Length: 401
Ligand code: ARG
Image 1: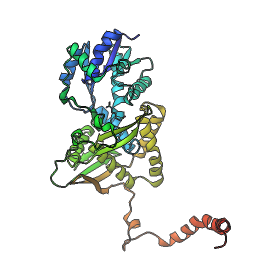
Image 2: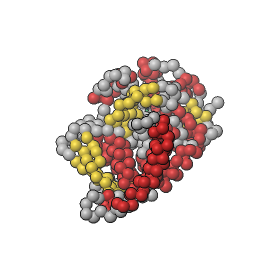
Image 3: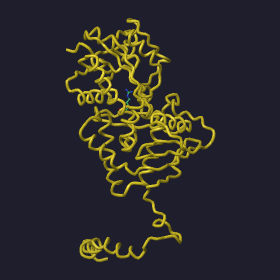
Image 4: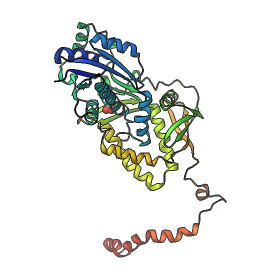
């Protein structure tokens, strides 16, 4: 039985109740760890609340840069979108939080980590499988899977222990947010036929008044500058999110297959992620050799699936990382994004000093250097097999014309 637990703490109702509940029901000491992955919020308030709830220690870790470079960047370079749509917002933050939970457990002599996830979602899988990969000896505890508290009862429980939960305007939604975007579930969204009400959105409320171009510079698959201004990746993602989001672009409304067998309706807003993924993929079109591009495209859905399924720290995922990294050697250049009202963001241009687009080969103008005569023999051999098949078998099967 665990004696000291490090809890992934958000400052919300469930994790606050979890602190007290674990102390009372499991007789453990609780250390709270709040990871800043770009979700915003006041971490002093969160820290204070953890202590009021009964934690013996409240840790706050600023992980924004680490999250951007070590988790978001590999996913971006892999063009990772689960089921072709979802850029893995929460799926990317769980493994980094798990890594910090494990580090804190080691530092503070804890023998377990804990999280506030219920049994119905993917996040429990990600927290626990990541922990199993990083620290096979640590126990994992999921209080929300053990208690049977409704939301009402949780609020009561918090009140009884004097835990100050500002259940602000009693939002019926379950929200998760980080640098890469915002996820919204529950409430009226549980009816897949209902249109998401405008109130669920925060990052994509239209406010822009005219068109705007954004030139994103990539260096080996990593975005490094906007309009010539270099910035750190976490900052750059924030900037693209703000600009593109102000055009009301970057929303996803999808039915998704969770790892635990449930189909769920998910709403996302992630203007920065979608714009950068679009720009990155476009630059790859210009810079990746054909076979490499096609093979990479085959591996990308698998990569996204592994990350979604909680296997960030796993041998296949790491092997794919090595492939993706090698593939990015020449993904260097610029992509111009054009934002327009209403709700539009497109790639309007791309260029690269190492691009494989060759004007002399592509043009139909006088500068054409392509040897047209080479095509004749090439096509004859290319079609030779089907030509023989057509003459001997295909036509015979169909009967006389
Ligand atoms: N469906 C998404 C995923 O599985 C979003 C999860 C959001 N998590 C949350 N605790 N609200 O990655």
